[in-house]
Length: 418
Ligand code: HAM
Image (cartoon, helix red, strand yellow):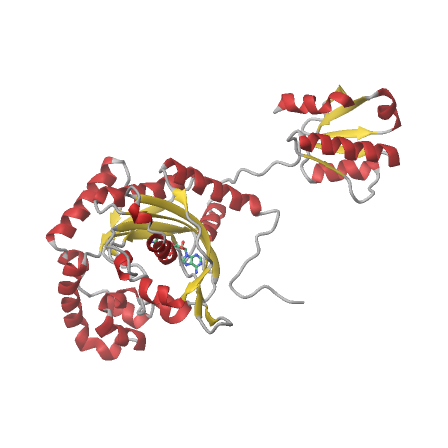
C-alpha cells in the first residue's frame, strides 16, 4: 500500500463540511469587505520567493519545495500566497485601475517543516491583500477583516497582538543598535543567525533555536526606534482598533517569519492548540511590489491557516453546521418499482430537490436503514400498490410522521417544503 506523504492530510467526505463552512465564511467575509478573489498558480519561479519572502528567512532557506522542471527551470510550490498575488498584481497591471485593489485567496501552501499538531507540509490559507492604500486605516481594515472572519466562525478565545517593525529609515538605525548588542555574543548564536548578522539582523529575532531565543530576550526592541512617521502610523492604527472596539496587546517581539513586512505587523493567537498557536498573521509590506519590479505601491494583508482554525474549533467545542442529508430517499420494493423510484429521483433532482435511491440491490428494510444512515430527511417506499394507485406515503424520518401524497405531484410536494 502507498501511504500519504508525511505532513499532509486527506479531507475525507465525512469531514468536508467543516472545510466548506470555513471557506464559505471566508468568501462571505471577503464580500463584506468588497474583496474579489485572485487565483494564482500553485507553483511559481523560485526567484519570486527568494526576492519576495526573503533569502534569510527559514521559509526560503529550509522549507521550500523546489525542483527543476523538464525545461530546467527552478520551480517552487508556493509556501504562502502574498508573493504570487503581488507578482500577478504587477504582471496584470492591476494598479492601473481604481485603488485600492482588494483581493482574497483560498490556497494550498507548502513548507517542508517538522510536522506536529497544527503544522503541516501542505496546509491551506485564507488570505487577503490590499494594494495602493498607504494610510493606517487600511491596516485597521485588514485587521478588522481578520477579526470579523474569526467572529463569524464563532471563535472567541484568540488574542490580537500587534507591533510595528518600522520602515527602511527606522530599520537602519535599529539594525545598528541590534548588531551592537549581538556582536559580543556572535559565538553563542546558531550558524544560521551568524549568517543573518550581516545580511538581515532583524531575522535573528525570529530564530527558534533556544540559545538564540535566550539571547534575543535582552535585545533592544524595534518599537523603541520608530521614526516619527512610523510612530504616528502605529498610534493611528491603535486608535482605529480602539474606535472599532477591538482589543489588542502590543507585543514588541513580533517580527514575523517573512522579510517583506514594514510598519504594522499582527497575529491572532490561541492558547488552545499547542505550540503552533498563531491562527492568523499579517501586516503591511510597502516595499514588496517595488522589490518585485512594479511601481512603488503600499500593501497590507493577512493569511489565516485553515487547519489551525479547524483544530481550534474542534478543541474548543465550536460547532460546525453539519451538511444535511438528501431531502428524500425513494425506496423500490421490486424490479418495476425500483425503475419508478429511479425515475422519481431524476425528476426531483431536475427540480433542485436533493434525492437518492439504492444502487446496490438492498432489501426494502435495508434501504430504510441506509436512508437513515445517510441522513435522508424523508423516505418514500414504492411497490406494486403505489404503482397501481399513484399514491404514496412520505415518511418524515425525524419523527416517523407519515403523510399521503400523489406520486405525480411529488416534486411540488417537496418544493412547497423548501
Ligand atoms: P504566515 O504567518 O507565514 O504568513 O502564515 C499565515 C498562517 O498560515 C499562520 O498564521 C498559520 O495559521 C498558517 N500556517 C503557516 N505555516 C503553517 C504550517 N506549516 N501548517 C499549518 N498552518 C500553517 C503568511 O503566509 C503571509 N503570506 C501572510 C500575509 C498575507 N501577510 C500579508 N499578507
